[in-house]
Amino acid sequence: MKYVIVIISCFLTLNISAQKQTLSDKLMGRTYHDGLIVLNSGDTLKGKIVMSNDHSDYKLVEFVDTLTKEKKFYKPIDVQYFLVENLVFYSKKLNKKDVYMCLLVNDHLKLYLHKVLVATGYYSTTGITYVFEKPDGQMLQVFNNKLTGFSKKTGAFFSDYPELSEKIKNKTYKFNDVFIITKEYNTWLKSNRLE
Image (tube, rainbow, N blue to C red; front, top):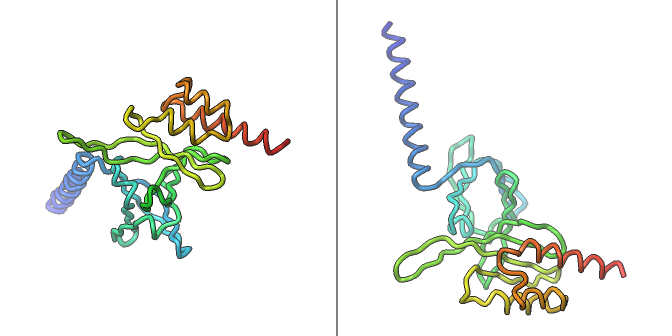
């Protein structure tokens, strides 16, 4: 009988401590996902990748070795890419900084998701930006606010395709249409390459 009580007691203690960890992680918005990291050295690491769904995920990746439980942090400069579930995060240089960007569209014109810290005098939050990357490596980061001039900057970026550029400048296409813009530009690129 004592053994049963000891075993139940141990089980409850382990269960409670596991719940506290989970609760703590949930409060911090941290989740653990199966994933892998491919380092610039060519090494591939499989384990858990910690995601907090904010801008910090795009500057540093936290990796937990599932065998040793050892935590390591990797900067974009050390990593080619990492995978979390079905998402691929590539190391890229954006505005002269090394960052991670989540690939959303993998075609001639690539579309990435990148999160940034948005701070005012009153609050700070994580903002979503998209990054277009042309086949020649030119990149444009677009924001969802009126201060950054989406129509003007994005229209100029796509000036090699005048019809699309005009739709953006005339505000037929706006920030929420980045997938449509990407698809239309890729269709145009493919048709021009076939001619």
